[in-house]
Length: 419
Image 1 (cartoon, rainbow, N blue to C red):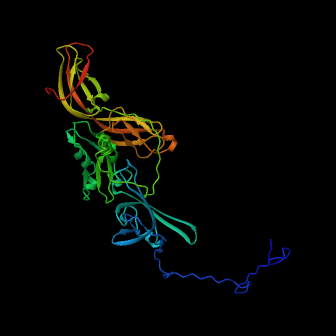
Image 2: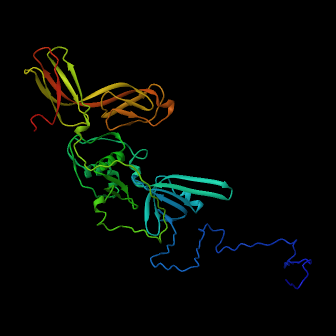
Image 3: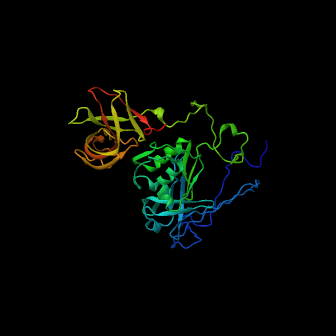
């Protein structure tokens, strides 16, 4: 090997700068806008390649909130909705510090995006400051439908003694939105609910609507514009998958996450629809003897669920039963709440008054059966006593029997003389 220098010699390197090393390096910030203005930061993306796929679109995302004729700048946002939830939920971070005072709780806003707008109502505001100069302002918003249910709306108590179409019952329960001009897009088959099969006692109207819709395999959901839609949970049956046109096709050019796993689920090849009689009754029959006539008395029948009934017996052929109609009964009970739940002796049609004798457990809700009372508070573990004064109703029958004997009474469907 030959080289032009001695291998024992050192190779020297040099570094030169155009300023003295003991001088301070000056920095400079150039802003394309006046820093004294609260303008939204401008962002720019430069792609150093050509989009060969002509189906690709460049979307300039500049979201904002429209509120009472004003446009409020948005720094970031997220909008989501679960499959079985009737609401859209949004979390929005505001760019303008002064806009938080303008947006009041309960007010309706419109989140405007390039391709869709969401009509929402504000249900929360937050301010966080991790440093004097780092302030984050955010709001949470939800679909207007949420304002029909507690805690924003009131529970409902109602019994449908006459046959009612499912769509009409849903429209009645959601009447608050329809009065504001919100229409319901009903995409299910409509069916007639028999008399007495639908009732609500201090119930959440949205939960009741969801139960009605789920009876036919449906789903209640809010649309981005604030409207409502009742649709099939699975709009397309598996046997029609081959002949259907996909609404969206995902290819290798799209960015997505995919997974595959085997899951064991129960399957059904036959469904029977009935009026619910196979679920069993919880009818109450009580006999009140006449104090002055041992061969006479009153029979109170409280059907559950409430429906048209008549009374029969298996006793002496000379025993007579006369219908006296529907009467209201006033009851007073001392209920014992355990873990936030208690049960009344009779279905509660109207709660007149309630007085806690131990710990105040707060507001209560009454289940659709009319007997189960519950509270959400955790005070004292949900244990307390309450004096409850309420109204219930019952069919009353006058009974005359010629001899002293035990009589078996039977509750029959429909009125006397009906087929």
